[in-house]
Image 1: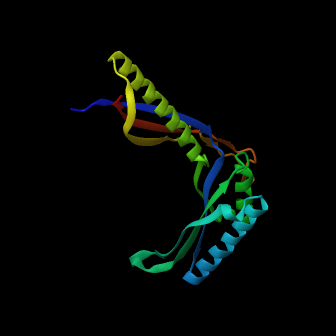
Image 2: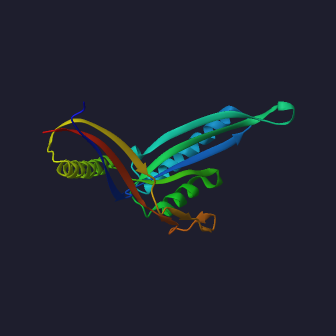
Image 3: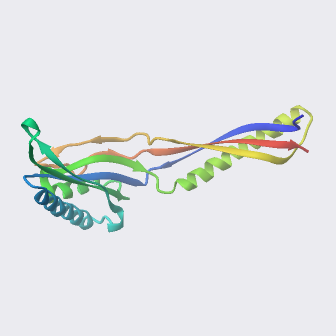
Length: 207
């Protein structure tokens, strides 16, 4: 016969976004594969230089994908090649999105693509720690209350299991305003908050 009590506790911690992650891409069509690859390399270097000039650290820019593939016309005849290069960019300047995008557009024009944008929290471990402590406090309070109601006292912990969950950032929005081939420097991008949920199942032995 089991001698003890098992309860669950939940904790939640929230923090404002402190990172902006985006993916920029450049692409080029050309009659031969070497030309397509060479032009993409040039444009990738131009975007990289523009980002560095705007204060983005080189360590915060990384290749996320590279592709080269043929293009087909009628009767599946190869008519040329398309090369592309995508770069994952991380910035801590949450208000500088429009400025970064303008710099990249100025560097390579219409060959630039914005493929992804997300606000994030850099130190999720701190959120998990806070949520875990809240979950354990709640679990212990439940256990002590139930023990009192049944005329028992809790002893040592026999087992603990944990489940974590992340709630997507809230209140994200982006409103692009094109002006003269670029984007408004005050492009409306609003960071949100990230929430971490931790659920603990804790088993106490009776004292």
